[in-house]
Amino acid sequence: MTRPRKRAFPNTYVIVFFVIIFAAILTWFVPGGTFDRQTIVVNGVERQVINPESFNFTGNEPQTWEIFSALFDGFVDKADIIVFILLIGGAFWIMNRTKAIDMGIYAFLRFTKRMEHNRFLR
Image (tube, rainbow, N blue to C red; front, side, top):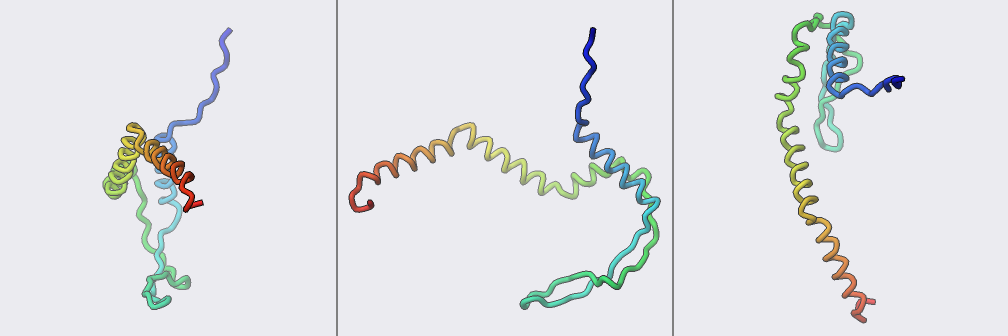
């Protein structure tokens, strides 16, 4: 007798794909619009904020075939952030693999252990 298969949580790419499909479907039903921006000064710094009473409807731009390139366009637009995260992750991997952080902590603990014996620092 075979056991019933457990339902597993879907892959991340499947979730992202369905979110993109859902957002593309919503472009057919939700009207587009914009707010006007105004410049205000807060503590000597100019800031652009939206004016809540200035909403204007714009034309609908329903998405059809653009959903297939949405993931790649997102990667291209945010490539600098992706590269930064990969570099930082690689640096942490190298430090973890070489035990550099552990050795630094051990050196600090040995130093403080020697400082306990110094009567001027008690």
